[in-house]
Length: 98
Image 1 (cartoon, helix red, strand yellow):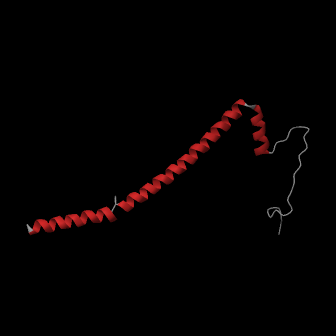
Image 2 (tube, helix red, strand yellow):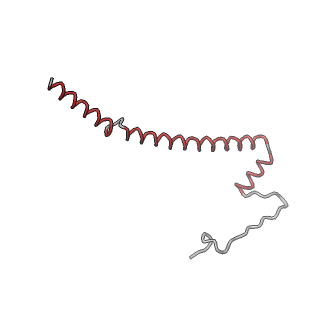
């Protein structure tokens, strides 16, 4: 009877140790839950980015005005007959040379 009690106590302590400190412990599960939520947040951001890109592609395929707008914004294109003005900020540290 005494040996059975000792075995049960050792088994109980071993299981409690794993529950609180080992792999699969409560702390480990909490960390995994945190990582899972961070990944879900990142995935949601990427889904939104992909939707915006898909809308832009659709607009570029169907609307010539959006192609012109994109070229003007990204490539600095100007139409023939237009005048281009470049305004430089004198306080801009990127333009100053030492």
